[in-house]
Length: 631
Image 1 (cartoon, helix red, strand yellow):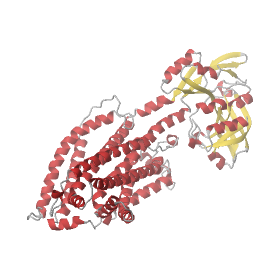
Image 2 (cartoon, rainbow, N blue to C red):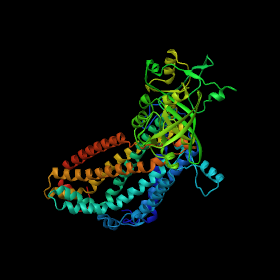
Image 3 (cartoon, one colour):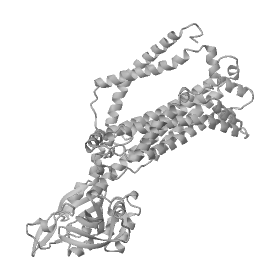
Image 4 (cartoon, one colour):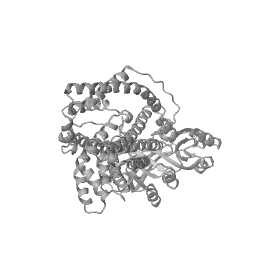
């Protein structure tokens, strides 16, 4: 209109610049207050969408915060002026001609921006799958050890300090969303052709309208797909990280709790109270006393006595000792883990990806053969071993040494409390080892407990029963320590706030699209009413259009978010040592959060449909059906 009234392009751009600047200043002032409130909300984050923390952060506006704010203000003004550059070329006549039916593809389609963005996203996914992680321990075998050390140290060892947790998947989601929009036009044309063979007038009008007005709904549909995909990814990432904190702590401990208890050691007829643990670093009998050659026998309280303590649900003996076996060309050091096969499966932490068979099946294999042993599958492949093969294992325990001929009865990839850098793990029957030693040897006690009860209280209850506990490891205390890390709170607060903002933008964007679409099509809808379409048919027309877009966005966004989660999250696990990446991430899709999004979109659909139906009923045909502009 300004151009048709004689305004120059510079004047149009100047008006747009001033509008953007004034709006940006108001937004900056409001953003300062809102940003401080959001920072306090992030400080109270305990988990994803859980703001029940009691920590009150002292919010300070720093110089960098002002710099970021002014930088975003400049970008906002630029985003306001950029569309005006194209609009300044038009008069009313040329603008109406172009908006009558958008035949030209969007600028990003003409520039093939979606394909260009897909290239780095696809390359990033390819590199992750090749190297197995964002930050591998050895960056490149071709580099020197010093160069690898420097490069690896420059990469973030903490997953909560890794920006690629969000940047890499966000780039992939954006690229794939744009690719879907490129494919949407031929899909809608095909649906319009199929609808022409049905008897539904509303469905036919909806399909033809969507096929011909791709440019009008592309933006809200892209917003829905993009935000829903990121929401599904962030919800899945949050649930995966929450689950991994639990898994990593319980894998390190082995179960809910691990106790190191004292026993009575008899040497030359005398009794000696000792608190030696049944761990791999425990000294052997030959090295515990200078010149001592006698064999010790140990006595402990029955492990079943632990069940008398409140909140102790299970107990099992687990002995961990140094061991060696002739594998390949020489003697290979390792660890022998003696388990109480009857109780171990009910107490130990286990995941389905630790072994091809279940833990119960592995324990049954040990029960079927007293001298059976379980080995890592990697060791079986490395030393050309298979189930049924026999090997000789020497175990160095505090009660003495034992040479055992064992038969391989099963294999695993990971086992609770074991890390591959410790050496080959031999899992066997603890009672069989004690038979070969001629008596018991110090062992640990793994407990299954009520997670709501502090470990210190359980230790106090057991000591009251007469157990001499020298140390205790509590998995839940490790989990609580991990959950209260500031880096974790910051990331989960950012994910929660981003999720809420994305949900709000999606709802608000589609509501505006529905209202503006109704106003833009006011004459068209009035003509349809004038030629005989009823109010119910008109409502069905708008409902099918809006419902189709929301349903398409939900399906595409959910599928894309779940696929991106499965593609990226397993390779985002980083750490300073290989042990930091054990156990690997077990991706958990955030379906409970996604269902909430579905419910929110359902409420949005019903509310918008009710509003549009009200506007249709209040429509006056003599106002809508006229030549010229809309009312």
